[in-house]
Image (cartoon, rainbow, N blue to C red; front, side):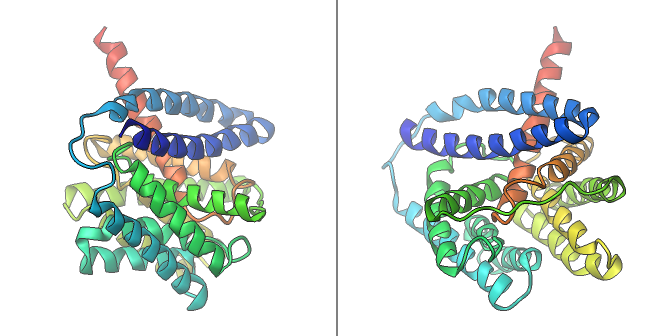
Amino acid sequence: MIAKRSAGFILLAATVGMLYYYAVKVALDQSPLFAVPLGIAALCLLYGFYLERGALTAPWNGPLFPTKDLYLFLSVFSGGVVSYWLNVGIGLGAVVAAALVGVLAGTLLPAYAVPLYCGSFVGMASPKVLTAGHVVLASAIAGAIYVLAQDVFNGFGGKLGTIACAGCVLTAAFSGKALLTGTVPPADVASRMIITSVIAAVAAYLVNVRLGKGAVMGSAIVGLVGGLVLPALIPDIGATLATVCICASFAGMSSKARIPNEALMALAGVLVGLVFVYSSPYMGGAGGKLGTTAFGSVIAVNALQKASAKLFSR
């Protein structure tokens, strides 16, 4: 069991660590002022990994791979294939496709809503990077990682997207497919992206925790509203803001035990926005990158809270 959990732990930590490395690297090159908070966040992220080490050796009774694992794998796989079909085949776009899968899963199949929603992030992959055949492989890899990582990093929003991202990145590497590159948005656009991120993160947290609708519905509702409303409301950058909206909504999937209040969630939203902006040149087109951005942010904020509490208690 330790080997199973360790494999999942390492894959998730490596994926989010790589993204935060790129964000800090770009910030150092282009905006050294913002490299400071991103560098602090990266250190907190590493501390967060250290704090989570206990999950690797937690007690376990039962078989290493119970029958439930097969159903979890198939759910992730199905979510990826259906989401990609809605995204590319039907033309709904990545944000609406993933959010729609989440809403339908949360309503019709609540017992498997989480793995189905996880798979939906694989389906957000750009067809410029992964074709339908590649998405089938990425969904299978993500399903396997979901099974391996189901007992680690629980309660942190964005974990599902990180699983999907790992599946997409590994598939791209195996297939010799290059991920897309982008540019850091200008300051006026970046500021609106960060504001959107804070609002979406807190809104998803409210639906998830305060209204008791659960993590999947909290993120999916906010993401669906953002995907439908923002492009119509702000034609010039609405599509980008909708992407930021669903990205930050993944942070709002965190449990109250991990992020206990709206103030800390707002801080996580700021960090999501900063990482989104400064990681733009890297890992483009990989489904789950948005969730990975959120995942690192809530781990860092949780670790910062715990480090602060320990410091002040002394």
